[in-house]
Structures are given as structure tokens and as C-alpha cells.
Image (cartoon, rainbow, N blue to C red):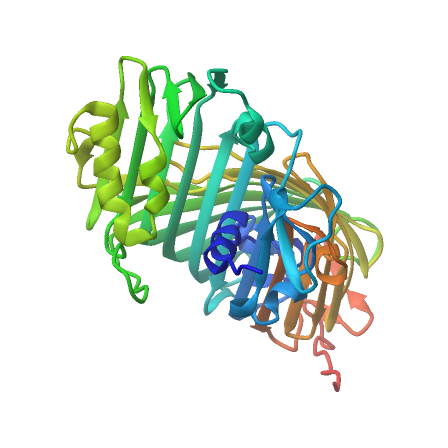
Length: 490
């Protein structure tokens, strides 16, 4: 059986790295500074005067183009360098893959394909409560994201492979981007009493350090058709694309600082109070997150290929592409094929990629002092032609909350496709969770998986916490003489 280590790597990269919003941490009233990633005012109901995140990490895999047959996450983590793969379309219909091998296959009969990736490491971060109304905090994060949206259905493997020659199909505008960056954010929130409850405003201003990035954008609808001799024919098109050059050599990857930028998150939280000992009765949040742009000014190249006449391009030469070291040669070759000169497509030595901007709405209801049910809807939107882009994400998460224990069961749907059931558990200062429990515990057609964790520190004394619940007066929680909470023994 052949081994396909490069194919496995490409599939893993294509299938994405994103922990889908990590709602097991974000919606919890004990989420502290970590909850400000979804809404910079969401920690207004956290019963701590301070909170510290030591480290938070996340990984998610999701796409609707390709999948691995009868696989789960544990199968991929067992000796990833020794994995054997089979190409599913080459197997006879209904035939199983070889024992110990994993078959790579492709979805059929769906519409435009989507892909989203984000790997996240949240470093040392904290907030402190300055007085009754003000909180300030600092957030440090390292992020990698890749997204592709609008890839038309005729590009799926089975449809394209069986398509007759000279049968045109429309290619609608699409975009894709990948970037790696770090950010340092200053968080501030202010909470005040209003009629029937409290209103909190929060903002996080972020300084960005841009490392590696690339984007590809098709700006117009054009027609494409298969042509004999491994060629493609197309009507006039308008492509723009850019990339950093600091890691286009063979060898070990070494991140290079190639630019910077600024970003911001803003949010509001409104809470109403009931008659129980719960923190609140209802909690409503609204936020705009990742408003900003990465500017790549060093080791950067931007190109544009705009044609005015139909052309035919041979694809045979691109089959010898082996890796990043060949990229510059092939970009010049494409410029010569499409525009008649290898340097014509070059535009400038800088480019920008907008952050994955999104609108998020959160709703939370207390059932009593320990049980809550929360919901969050996040909708991504691009702010410019070259942009990382989230999709739509809707989740409902019933949860049990206690000072020393949390359990959450988020049920989510991404881009209105499949429903996923997750699980998140916090024990004291350690949280582990997933938004797709099925991909971990059972074998199936593997195109998504998710895992995240956080290690935190927070005070043993809760702000306003009594031995038997919270003391509320005039809509506020106030400290009492019995405010200390005894630490459980584990």
C-alpha cells in the first residue's frame, strides 16, 4: 500500500484548525478574562475581583470538501508519521480500505464548499476589578487562521472528474486567505445600574504582529471548461493573490515578523435580576469582534492577473510542484501563461488581510443558582477584498455551574449544515472541552473534530459570595462578612 504523507499533511491543513468559539469557556460565568474573547464585556457577571489565564489552547478540524472514511481523532494521533492512506475514488464501489489504512474520499451533491481554520494559543492574560464598576485586563494570544468560501460545486472531485470536455460551468467570486499573527490586547469594561438590572460596556484594543500570510481572490464570475491534454479553458477572469516570502525555502519553518496592525472588539451586556440566588435572571450580550487588519510590509508580494480575452492554460506543468520553494517560479509561469510575461502580474511589495470580523449575539438564562442555559450566534463578514472570514455559528449550551465545577453540553450547527454535540468540563482551575464529541468517541466519516483546554487561576474568595448564595441589595451583589469560600480537597 502506498503511503501519502504529503497528502495527509495537506488534508490536515485544508481541513482546518479551529476550536469553534470554545463556548464551554466563553459562556461560563467563571470564564473570567477568557470570556472576553467572545464579548469584551462578558466577564461583567464573573464573581471574581481578579482572574488569570495561564494558558489556553484549541484545535478544530472542519470542512465540507473531503473526509477520511471510518476514522476518529485517536486514529490520527497514533503515530501520525506512519499513517497509511488510500485514495477512495480508486477503490471499487463498496470495497473496504486495507486493514490499518485510511481512505481519503470526497463529498458529493453539496453546494458551495467552505473551509475555516484557526489554531489558538492564549498566553498569560488577566483582569482586575479596580472598583465596583471598572475592570481592566490584558490579553495575549497567538493565532493561525485559514478560510476559503464560495468554492462552486463543480469543483468537487467526482463532479469535475466525470465532467465532459468543452462543457462550461460558471465560477462565482470566491476568496481564500491564511495568516499567522500574535496580538496583545488591553481590555476595559464599565458596568452601571439601569432600570431592572445592569448594563456593561467593554472594549479590547489590540496591537497585532503579522508573521506569515497569503490570500487568493476571484473578483468576477467567469466560465471554465475542461479541455483535452490536461488543460483548462476560460473566459476573462480577474484574480488577485499575495503571499509572504520569508519561508519559501526548503528546511525548518521559522516564523518571521513581516508587519503589524491594529484591531478591536467592542461589546455590551445587559442583565436582569430575578428572585433566586442566581447571579442574574437573564443576560443579553451583543459584540463586534476582530475589527482590524494585518498589514504585511516586509518579505511580501502582491499580484493581479486580469485577462481580457478567453485563454487556454495547460495544467500539466503544475504537477511537478513539490513545495514552497517552487512557489515563486510557478507564480511567474502563471503570469506568462495568462498575461504573456512572467513579471506582468506583479503589483507591489506589500498587502493587507482583514481580520475575521464577526457579529455575535449571546443570550443566557438562569434556571436556578446552579443551572443555566445559554445560546450564542456568531456571523462572520469580510471587511475588505482580502479577508479571513468566519461562517455562521449557532449554539445552545445548557450547563451546570459551581465554584469548583462546571459541565456544559453545547449543541451547535456551523454554516447551517450538520448538528454537532459537544462537552466541556471544568474542575477548579482546569477546563477541557470539545464541540464535536462524536468525532472523538466513534469512528465515522471524519471531516471535523475539536478539542480545547484552559488552565487558570482565580481567587478563593468570591466577590459578594455568602455561604448560602449571593446577597443582593438594590440590584447589586455586595460582599458580606462570610465571603470566604473554603477550598475543596481534590
